Every structure is written in structure tokens, then in C-alpha cells.
Image 1 (cartoon, one colour):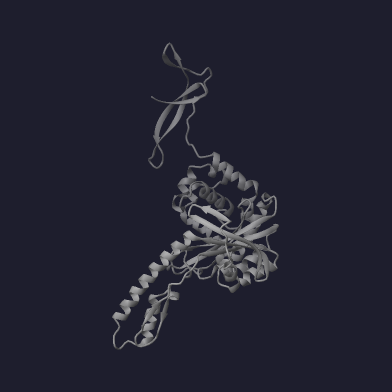
Image 2 (cartoon, rainbow, N blue to C red; image 1 turned 180 degrees about the vertical axis):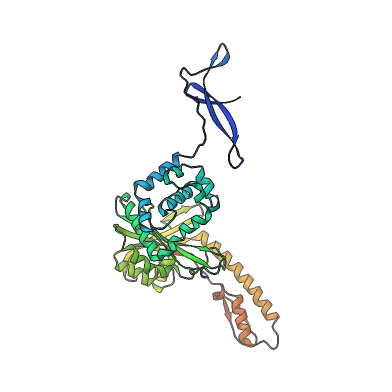
Length: 407
């Protein structure tokens, strides 16, 4: 007979243990009977049986309960499950219970849809939702998630804002919003929003862009929206402004990254009395002029990647008063310069191969087109003379890796 000993303080409790196989054939064990307390008498271990014995019982099932219960109770406490069922009604499996179960899984274990039903079976969620594990197969789950496509992008944003209104009281003071965009790519070619565009994954597959707005203080998600894969980050700001106005929350600022900042967007945000914190691309004369400001060595930040010098200026940009933080990163400068020189070297080899393999029938126009393709990415460091000799010259100009942030 196998025994299980559990120590609590100075006492050791002994149980009879039984091994068994579950429905999948996996070997598990369970305590079947309490035997008593183990003590040592005259150097010999003995088990003192309990004074009162309960009638025999058999453990038929054990489920994960603690963390599951806490998370599900939070969904119920804030009325999110009931709200989802009201906003996205459907026949069959209820959206609120299914989405809550999927969210808890994502927080705790992150199983795939194919394995979700098995994970669900080993938790207490069936007791809370009233949904049997057999119903939560990948086909039914896919059907529930497709319900979102029926209400459309605007309907999804409406749901997001209603959900946020249920939890916004957790933000006890004015909050700064953080906005960012990511992308995910697909091998399918039939998704309506999947387009080829700027790829963060360095591939040429069609993708969609996903924008998310969250609060900075508590990290609460406010809303998300999907965009076509070929839309630029800067092109989503006007939509963002309109949606943020619908949020009933006192907002003191919004944080953007450099890819979303443009003259038009910054002026629009400032006109709506939103403070802006974000990187500024060096594509305008005003930004380039600020970056050329002298940077002293008095202000420095030591980072694992190297030393950064910065200058904090009270100034204006596009007529918007604020502060400009101008940074100089010597380590990044050297990394960028090394990568650039390598690219220039590769381009020079390609150009030499093109010129050495040209035929008498090849026109100057087609030759120039081929050379321009070879120097793509480093064309600023080449000059193409469209003449009979087809000479090329590489300019290696001094450059400094400077960055500009605005607030």
C-alpha cells in the first residue's frame, strides 16, 4: 500500500494513495483514505488512527480551482460577461462565458484552440459557465469568434468602449494614454484586410495592422482596431482622435512613437487640447533644425548599450510650444555606420558586376535602372553619371545618430 505523508507544522498526516489512469491514459495518483498521524515511539514510527472516522468516500474528479475562480469572479464582479452577452447576442454558445474562459486560459496557460477543450475539462470553469468541455471544440470556438465580424469594425470599437466604461473607475486620476500598432501576417490571400505593406517581421507576406490604446497608470486596455496591412502608422491618428473623444475619461496626454508623428497629426492633436509625448521623425526642416542644436556632455544617461548625451530645450515645433529632448547615441552611431558601410560595399560589388556584364545592345536607360536597383537603400552615397563611361562615385559623408523626442 502506497502512502502519502503531508507535514503541517510538527505533525505528519498519512494518507493511503492509489494510482490510476485518466481518460487519456495518463497515470495519476489520488489520496483515497486518511490513515492518521505518524509519530515516533521508542524509535519506531507508528500511525495513530483518527479518533473519529468519516464514512468512506471516493474522489472521482479533481479540477483546478483557485486561480480560475479568482479570474472568473473578476469578470463577474465588473459585469463584463453579462455586458458581452448583451452587446454581442447569438444563438448557441454565449459570447460572454466563452470569451471569459478564453481570456483566463490566455492569462494562465495560453493553450491553442485545439487543446483548449482538454485544458477547460481540468478546470472549474464548467461549474461556473454551465458549458460542457465537448461543446468547446475548435469549430464551435471559431464560430463564436466569427460573431465579431458580423458587427463590423465599428461595432467592435463600440464593444471595447463599453467594456472600458465598466472598469474605468479603476483609474483614480487623470491618465495618459499609450497608443501603438503591431502587425500579424498571413499565408492566406483571401482575407479582405490582408495587404502587403511595411513589415515588422521582415517578410513580403500580406498582413493586417492592429492598433491598441491603453492607459499608462494601470495599463487598462481602452480599445483596439484593425487596419489594412498597407496603411501607415501615421495614417491612423485621425481615426484615433475621433475614438479617444468617445472615451469618458479625463486624459492629460497621449504617447506615440516616431512612426505616427507628422506635422499634420501633431497640429491636430494639439488643436484638440491633447498633450503629446513621442519621438519626432527627422523629415521636416523644423525637426532637423532642432536636432542640430549643440549637445553638451553635462547631461548623460548610462544604458547597457552605451552612453547617451541629451539636451532638454524649452522650444516650439510647428507652432506647438513644448520641450524637445535631443539625444546623441555614440554606440548606435557606430553600429549604424558599420552596417551602412557594409551595404555600400555590397552595392559597389553589384554595380561592378553589372558594368562588367553589359552587352553592346543594352541601352543606357535599362542599365541605369539596373544600377539603381542594386544601390537601393544606400543610393544617397552614389552618384550615377548617365554617360558612355557609366562612371559611379560613392560619397561617404559624415553622419550623426541623433534622435528627437517631443513633449
